[in-house]
Image (tube, rainbow, N blue to C red; front, side):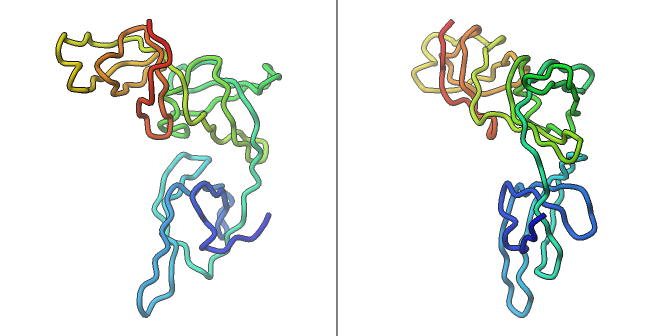
Length: 193
């Protein structure tokens, strides 16, 4: 595992720290230099085994190493009682599950048969990465009231994955919309019902 300096812990970097064997992913990064003090990297990091997000101040004298993570394509199968089940692409017998705590916001955009990237640490699957944009069908949408669509307002709809998203008033039940899975925001209408 390659050694990392504290100022190399940029967003998206997966690393281990000091004597802690757990892999962490950097979610936020800010380099802070104060007068009369040593500089620090102020981080928000996510433990890939537990899903917990922590504030962390990384100092130059700490030991950081790049975590050896394998990326594999997997298929989402189904969810039951907070367990999200996947199987390796091309190997349906190799199944595993991840909890809502580990998946975070990604869970609300999963629909059966979706291919996603998975992170494997050692012999354990620890997380997934959704495509940045996904097409999802609107299953519940309040009707637009005639005349109020000219102002360009928004309304909240429910997608086939169960996620609630704000969309323009012209979107109807049955439409397929493109959603940014990172921000949870509507991008465009893909298909009209």
